Length: 467
Image 1: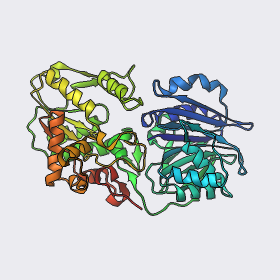
Image 2 (image 1 turned 45 degrees about the vertical axis):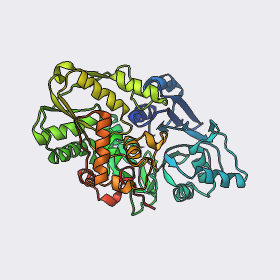
Image 3 (image 1 turned 90 degrees about the vertical axis):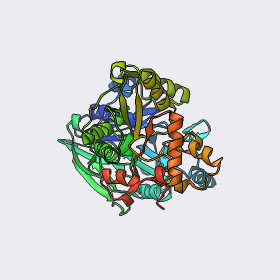
Image 4 (image 1 turned 45 degrees about the horizontal axis):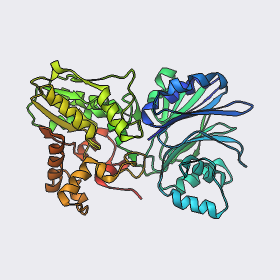
């Protein structure tokens, strides 16, 4: 998915930029980058974060950075930030999102004899495409509006310019941007959790399509917010850090409510409740509190040396990380009927290995309660589940087996309680060798978040899209 952080300060901003960007590390998989502007120049640095942590990669770069403005990014795809010279002046840019119509935009650019320099593996860097679109207009504001108008998918961005840092949220607000303030400095971030330990208070969340210009003295709206919003609901379920808020709604609070909703609709007879670390924990606490059932930790995560399991690009390495970082505690497992809450089931292969370990350690029963419905449709708007084939999704694999390759009934499979939905869930349960499996209902998830359903993107569960 990726995350961005920008700051403008009356004093040197490098420390805030370094730690603020690091607080977005959980959102990206591939590269991190920072750029800092002073009165003489813009300096940048980009490193791979596939096999190491952001801070360790960038700590040695800090002495070369000095300035009052900075932008940083944790990226799951392209190398950023980019530094661009243009008729608008020199600027640096970072982006978060996904451009679905890249081929169309490339051909249009080539027809106007434009060229691109940031290519890798024969593909054009999406952030350079966004920079090109901005440079095609008479002002930064017009350029940002052009990006919002022509990009199909989503694009939130930060622009570091001579006048300050522009923060622009994508047209339908699929990804968040929050503004923070402390004495002598203003900041913009994807994750509000980046602010607290740096001394920033939350000023407000940008609306969909809204653009502001940050300076050390304040911020000014340059493009107004639109009325339509489709913020990604999966932020609260999985991507977001527990201490963060989106639209003023805390992530951990929502996860507790999701777990409580699962409990209210459940009649499983169990001894204890547990969460698959990390994001399953908040859901499990909510379940346990609602059911007044003991919460235990039969799995603990070894974090000192093992990274997040979704970071490596190779699936075999992701599976290895997922296996090695979770350590089972036999004393809490043997003879127990355990119910686990998990944020979601994507492929199910890692989960299947964990379940096998539980039974090997003597679990009497293992029940699974994902905090969201079955993921049936690959994300069209963010870089989630896009590198996998559709059949890699546990739900689509089950549907393929039940329908012998026919996908014409996907709507029925996405409808909770329908005959086909029940058959799909049972097929997944058998594949994972669970005692029972029950997914969250979409209406309960929407209620747990607390926003009107039409303001949430739920495409990966029900296939709905806003056009």
